[in-house]
Image (tube, rainbow, N blue to C red):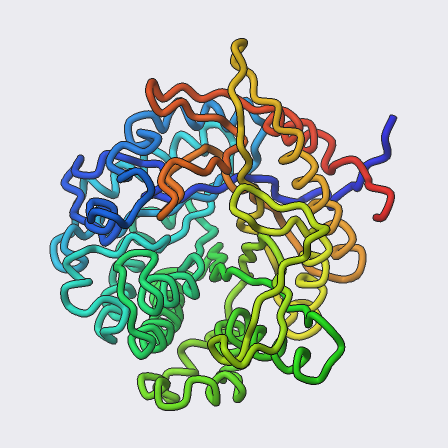
Length: 451
């Protein structure tokens, strides 16, 4: 029998999703339009012209999906709440039908003894607020505070684990700086302002929730983090990696945990940073209970004068890559977790980790996704090593429970441990789901030789 990497007895094993990616029901129950509703209907923005109008139809099939989670042995489920379901215009009139959907979902989770982890914002800003400037408008941070308070008032008696934002870096950079995500703007100045206002909204939401009731509340933020490795030992490549770390990681870590922006980041921003208000930093850095970590791969960096900020990217030709063309590199997760312990020291949850592959449904309705199993095993072994070496890692959420709408890639990428047939909405457990069920049951995966 293979030896196992045994995790702490109270370790949280779960899976994660996001509202726009799975819910569908895009106008049901009085829901307002989100920026992704508009963006996905804009010609040329999404592969194959796909939209999230139906997605996985989770809005109507949530009970069956919770039963699926129970079959998988999940101990926890991380989901996000669609802001325009709660406030169709982003503020003002509260939509009772919208919150009742999440109340039903949470009640069903608790019936199955599945711990709910709720994310307040996973990128689906009400379109009405985008028309007021979106996250580049400081007022939206205050509207988010009010939204967070309203949701917490309605669900806080049964949901105790909360995440304010999922990957605010992606919102600011892909949404406002490069424009490949909703709302599709390509304005670096707005991107920097959006990042600051997202951080401000996080701090204001934490304070508002604690003002309502701090009893039993565990609240944090989820950041997408990727360690930067220099392509060589040259001073220029090392400096480029340091810049990449500032831009990808410390841009959000330092304000949240140290109450300041990195000096080297501010130098890179130059006059783009005029939207940063230093007086906001005490609110941004209000203590939180945990940090959510989304990790998929590392970055290898070289000095490139022709690249933005002199940061060039390098591909390691000998490595394996996923269908997203992301390098499979579990050691990067170990490096990241131990670095977070050393430099910041928070309790940690892996709130997303997973891989997209070209999954094939066999005639007998099976998906043999051995590469995904190997990916998950390698990364869980990295988590186990990090815990052994002092990281305060409390749980792991695989991305994702279901195949779903993968943003600009539409339905062309599959991350789920459950296969979704988008024609008839069948859910079919992949081999990885069965492997994960066994891992949860045994409280850890098989040990790898290098671990």
